[in-house]
Image (cartoon, rainbow, N blue to C red):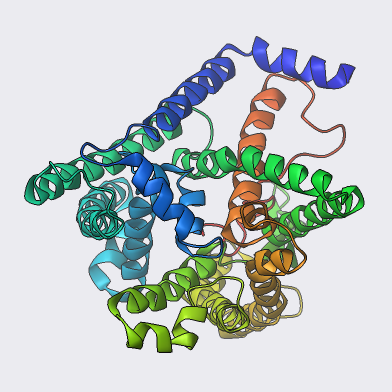
Length: 454
């Protein structure tokens, strides 16, 4: 405890770090405040009633978790930062497919990055307007619109407000990145997820105590710790390929000096959380199809209805397969073994026992393929863990924290933020946050891990 108190004092002593932390907390408070500002013309009570009638297993409840409750509140931040994330993913994928975006990403440096940011912002507004129209249609279907407000005025005004809310959230995230600590967009997502955690924990504790299930509650918390540890392993796990730098001649005598040794880390989960996001996006489609059906058609679509329940067996089987497939696809897109082979050649480095050039590229590709399989399976299992948790009687809100993108985002962002704080402490000659070693974020140590940019 004394060590923790001393570490907190050291953090407070560093003026720049203190200002960045306070600025970050202030911006996060503004973001959370905006989650409770309801759109004009919305009957909040009716919307809450409609949300309660959706069913605990409905996929829209997961959306509500990612937005920190703003979705069910019909707030100006109802869409959260997710349209910006979607736009960023689209621009990133275009970089793999179109030469123009490839040139901006790889060859035009800072000017290319600024152009990509501008394109991402414009695409964010377009996606927000499209998603905003769908969300407002959902409010209309839920009878959550004040009858005295003309529908045309309601749609026009609130479409602009939703777009403004998302752009504001994007701007807040960028301000945290520039003047705060850590990745601002990731922190906004994390704070929205954490905002739902206390309520879910309290509800689970009350449910267990009322039924005399204290032992089960202890088992649940122990299982949650195991899942967190597994997520840390998935985020930080790397396969280290040893590399050797060529000998160089130094001094007037030209004596050869042995080159340094290093390693090329290949991430166990190079795809990050992207496969889960892609798979979830596809699994939302059956829900929209179900909403388009009516009467007998809707009642007879039992299989489609099961795909709108994240605890059903068909949903989780398809979800698991999609996560595994998308992991392989995304790793194939972001891991360019030929590029890494050329980079090693330019650095006069080589893998011991492997010839430079195409043999090195083939070796890296083989290792990447082998390590992607356990990483993809672990990611797929983590994605369906919330459904497993509900099967053991855990309430749906608390079960969402047992896996999926929720736990990966929390673990990844927490590690990155702690790494930022630790770097400030070590620069000022203070002890780090741990007694031995350093906290490693998603970029690890050594050379940049393959897939670190995900």
